[in-house]
Length: 155
Image (cartoon, one colour):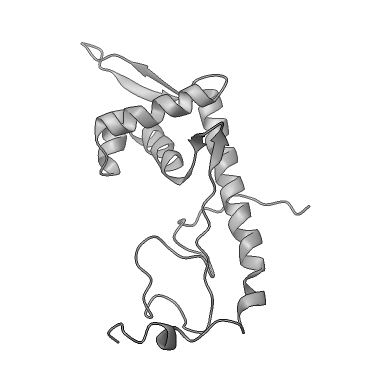
């Protein structure tokens, strides 16, 4: 099995992998197929970790606050807190710990397990994209031209 390493490039970069947002003819060569790969780690019926929760963990590590992390993602504090609760419930130990505000201020941080889980998820996510991208060439000559399929869209 090949060994994959975490890339430092933005998750929106990558040959053949669709960035977030709407795909248009300007975004991608018309003759090439593209992928939208999304890895979700399930625990029972709950999504323990996926792209959004991974981004939230990174934002918490960067800002030291669930509220600030949520705001940086255009997410309410309540929604961010609910996602943290799901992640904490799905793993053996919490991924995020908090301290209440007050004269010393509050805050949030990733636990050692939280840092490890985030790192493993990022490597797994990148590896899955690399593997899927390796198979794109199989479909290259099978895809219809973008304009013929989407002739009703403005050029």
